[in-house]
Each structure stands twice: as structure tokens, then as C-alpha cells.
Length: 265
Image (tube, rainbow, N blue to C red; front, top):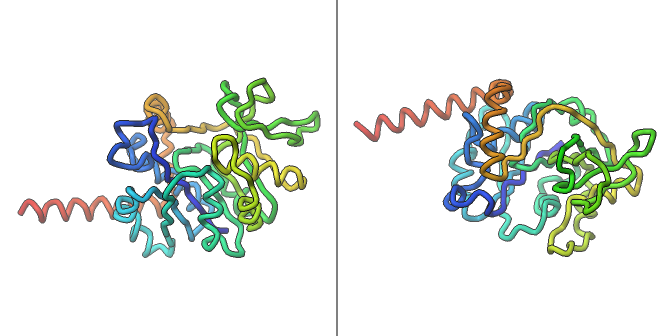
């Protein structure tokens, strides 16, 4: 299983904070945002992770993560997304990275309290998404279930009520997802929609949907970024990181302190 984190885009809703840096490098409580999706993947045993970044932020990501996990046999690579063309474009950009493997795609601004390691490790084929009940389903792609709790329809930002269950920003696919994404026509807003990928698997009856109740935080606006920080602090989410991640971050912090002291001497 390969991992992909989508951390591109311009994050205009967070201007001016993102005028000089990536949204995913902003802090959520005591850790940069990017470490939360990294934790989700590393906890599941994924050791080959591609991070898709905007060209203007590639150097910042490289400085932070380029060699952070080398001693732990975790490989981090980067792919530049020149112009954002939808979430599903990550699968096309990651074609060489995915190769013949399955892939876990996670959005770089999504923070999960739940641990999905079991589902990721046991994934074999098809597609698998994770849905949570929300108060504002019109903002998301939502999944509709029949009376037997089987997913029967997925609708992107429905104008009329379909369901209260939003599809969150963690997606598991087999390697057919690349060709599926390539064949997708852009939506009216000119993007390759991740909802269309999920629909393609659902049409084949190969999409599994797991419901969960833990916190799901989308830190994409100033208010949601603040709320995410408060919830992360309250629930100790960043304190439950995988030991490898905590150790790597601590070592990086110490190295920065040593460098700073040398500059002052």
C-alpha cells in the first residue's frame, strides 16, 4: 500500500496566513497540519508516501520533511501540482508512485481522531471510503444508504437533502483508480472530482463505506483552524501520534535548536 497526501492548492480562504506558506504547514495546536495526515498513514504501516505540493511551497516541504524519516525506513517524495484541477488529479499525478500497488489518498487538511489502521492494512481491492454524520451535508459529497445500510448513491454537495453522511478525506483504492481518473471528464467547475471516482467504484459494486463517530476536522478556514486546534488540545490527538513520528519531530526540533545556538555564537 502506497500513500498520497494532497497538500497543493492556494488556500485562499486562509489568506493572508497562506500568502507566504502552505496551509498544511500552518500549526494545528502544537504540530504543523501536515503531520496529522502523515500520522494516519504511518500508523497504518505505510512507508512510501508521496506529498503533492504547490510549486511555490515545494522548498518549504522539502526542508521540513525531506530527510525527517530516513532513519526509520519511511520514504517521503514530492510531486508538484502546478495548477489545482481537483482532488482526483492526485491519482494521475501519483501514477508512477502508485505503480501496481493499492493507494491510500488523504487530504492534507483533514484530521481524524479515529485510527483506521485496521481498514487500511486489510484493504485488498476496489474502493473504500469513510463517512461521518455532519450537520451541514450540503458542503460535502454525501453517501445515501438503503434500508440494509448499503451505499447506493453518492452526490457532490447536494442542493436537496440526500443524507447526513459526508464522505471524508481518506480514500483507499486499488491501482485501477489511475485509469478511472484519466477517463473522467472535468466537472462544471473544471475539476476532476473525487466523488466521480467513488461513483465509478460504487457502480461496479466495489465501494465499501465505513461509518465512524470520532472527530473529523477540516482545517480550511480561520474558524475551522481555530476549532481544530482547540479540539486537538482537548482530546490530546497530537499526543497520540505514532512513536516514530514523535521521535522524528523531537529530533528535528533539537537539531533546529542546535543550529540556532550556533548562529548566535
